[in-house]
Length: 367
Ligand code: NAD
View 1 (cartoon, rainbow, N blue to C red):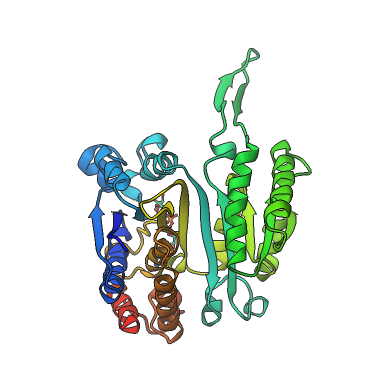
View 2 (view 1 turned 90 degrees about the vertical axis):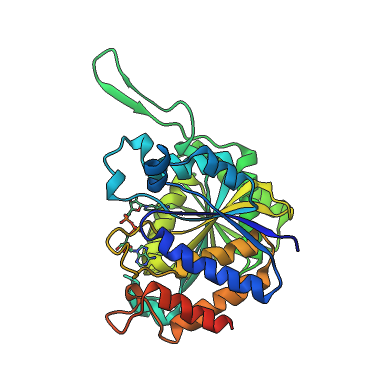
């Protein structure tokens, strides 16, 4: 395999702390497996605003374009909260990155090891085996991007705001394909979430998903659920789901609900895959932890690096086709945590270790 070129965007808060650990793990995997790793670091988010005057400088975008995948930390924090909404670190960096690289498919595993069920706000008897599901969210369409989007003052003096929810069949088909591939690699069950009793876009969504799965993946068991019911079912019995497939806004809400029931944000990774392929003819993607910059613990060496490490594992799986290496990293994280080495967020008041120690323990398991 050629050199793996990775754009590294640590960002703010705990971002650089957990990124340093993830890079050590990647370095170890590369050395063990004879791979050449080329990482190029670039500023993004608040630190980029401070240094370059904007959250996503041209140079950072160029670094990303020259790479096969982006490993992203997290951005934002109290220091930049007073900026106008359009200039906020998250909105002014992540959204343009998604748009620039057409990152249309967001894949978020909802994973809670049985040993960590006490981290979930759900009663442990509801999830004795932990949680193991995946949420696939369409990321570049729907109401967040649909036009027109405007606020107007009406002739009678009232003020009206308008957002447009719009989907094309082709957009639904390509995200359904991601759902099918994810389900094939797991329990072969796909639950498509919509609001087809009310929304035109959902009627098209349901018909398109049904036709596409029937034509392309008859072996997949497809079900449909209204989004209000899905929100309830997630809190009642998350393990009834294998793979959830949904549009942008519903996915935004449901994937956050899933993150909460899975306990600590410090354990949850994500991938956003693009339309373009990299030099390995695999999806170009952006990989990041589900959580934010955790200002309450930033700079203290307390952050859980697992979400960043698991995001790096997803990158090896999807953008570099190295399922074997991803499996090894995921196993090392699982074994380390279940054996009892834990950061404060998953230690339940027991003995805990810091970010670096956690990384060292995982490195040891990798050999
Ligand atoms: P947050 O995810 O940063 O923190 C929520 C809670 O989870 C905190 O108690 C935090 O300590 C904990 N947490 C998160 N990641 C952790 C980890 N790896 N280890 C241990 N504990 C962890 O959410 P927030 O407090 O709402 O947001 C803080 C900042 O992060 C805001 O500026 C927000 O805009 C930004 N943010 C960025 C992203 C992103 O970059 N994608 C996502 C969410 C929030």
